[in-house]
Length: 83
Length: 135
Image 1 (tube, chains in turn cyan, yellow):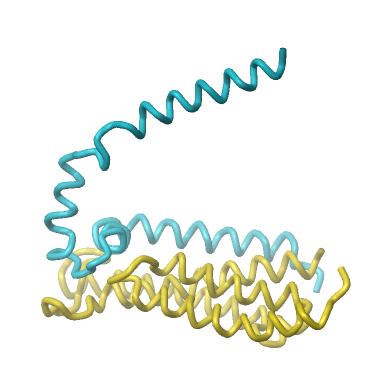
Image 2 (tube, rainbow over the protein chains, first blue to last red):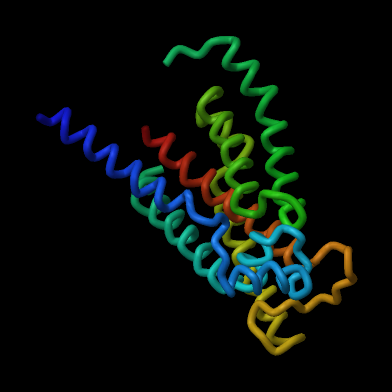
């Protein structure tokens, strides 16, 4: 019975993945068009991923670096104390 | 785990190339796949390779925890300073303060990539070294 449930779950996931991935790809959206059109001119980065995370969303990246700083501080304080 | 000569030699020969590849990913992040985070993690994995194959003592000799912590803090400070420089020059936090010539290197993105790469390498390396030392 458990085996049947596993197979059903896998088939369900496969159906969802197929439905999601078989559409037009990559999906068109106004945001994507804007990034492709203006990403290089406004940030100078050929790599559009970099154009997004250091150009348009550099503030986001600042937050991520703060998260990493907090993680390092936590590990050093909690684990690396007695040395 | 017993250390073997193979592990020792391979780790010592491979780690410098991992550092080199990490630096390549960081510095070419604006024009090819890669970037600060990815390159930094590759550099940190070089540190982890040395720590796993040669022991944390060797890794800490090469990369003392104090220096890694200082590098982490220093690069965060440079990131903030770059943001404030944007306020001064173009009146926007994290705005691009440098002139850009078409086809040239975008210096602001380049600077942020290097800063983030150093920060991620130092931070991840420090976390792993601290945890390995306790294990």
